[in-house]
Length: 170
Image (cartoon, rainbow, N blue to C red; front, side, top):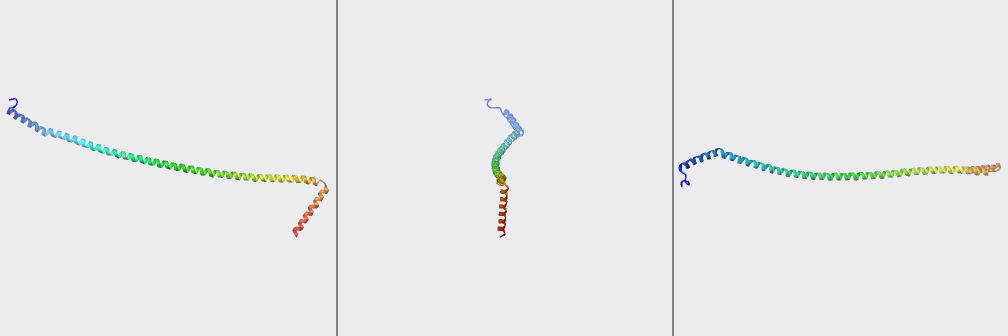
């Protein structure tokens, strides 16, 4: 039974060693362990807080990114709408200028045609007058080929002129 029951002296010294080890651990060991556990806990808490903040920042960044994308889409739509309106205005302006230019060209052509027509009419009249004079000259030469015929014509013309003068006086 000696094995199961230690002697009192041994128990005494075991108790003293236990108390000394407990006192040393209490004085230097436990505070270091609790400090390390507390520091580790604080580090973990800080890491969790930073991770939570990072998640919040990431969510905010995602929202900002989505709002920026939405704004970019709206700007793109506005730019496309403005470009379409500008293109339409330019096309309409070009069409109206083309119509005006076409009308001006047609009016110029009509005026030129009119001028050429008037000039052609004048030339034809001049040619007709010249031909008439030449024909009249040839006719008169044939009719007035003799002196008697010339004298008859002169007398007839003088009679007409005198008759016209009398009618004008009355």
